[in-house]
Length: 290
Image (tube, rainbow, N blue to C red; front, side):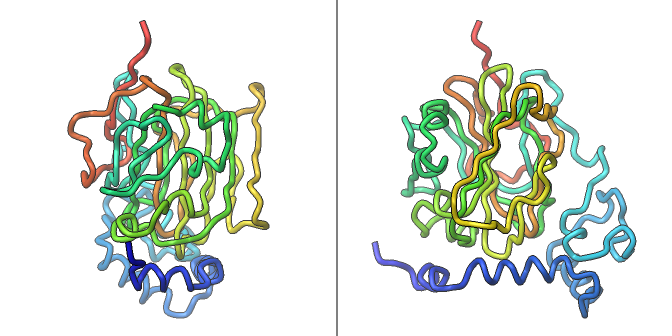
């Protein structure tokens, strides 16, 4: 297959340099044109002001920079969490890119394009075996979506892995044409113990996504190096988070991938590729072994 000109152009871009500039701009508290850009963003991205916990985005005390506007908190009632004990909820607002079951170690990125657990998990053999033949759901967050990421199910943090990489756009077009996109981009892999085994929530970086943050470590990127780094959380120290609790956030929007182990979850029949979703809505149900 020929390389699309736009893909080649992105390959040649200084992706990390541009993202570092965006990181600075989004956090600049004296940015010229702040209010002008914010008014444009509210119109462009159809931001629902009635959902926001602090609705006045122009209040520089509550929102000192543009990043704080994009990572705004919502009213608790704006995103009710699927209530049943076995419900697995959507971790973020966005659109389902793909959802299904892992074929040995192969996952679907988009129609006609696959990638592997080996690539996605940075070659971590233990995790590859853990999620072999498991289930996955990929959620794309656009710039107009709520940018915080929440827990799909109750879990205790055991491992966090930062995998440096490229920063291709994760737009639907790129998912269709960039091979192994999620396995090539920078990402943060968080692994949790649940009542039905391990669950992973993977936050994938992208161009102009100036940082990925978690509630237990703060800002993880931009990275200080190019080596994979792993943090292990002992049972006595790992954070325990409930379904629907905030676990992290993006700057401008990106992609979240959720992994479950084999036969641990059954996806809801109405959740298909292209389906818009909101954080807290049901994605599927755990299938406990009797």
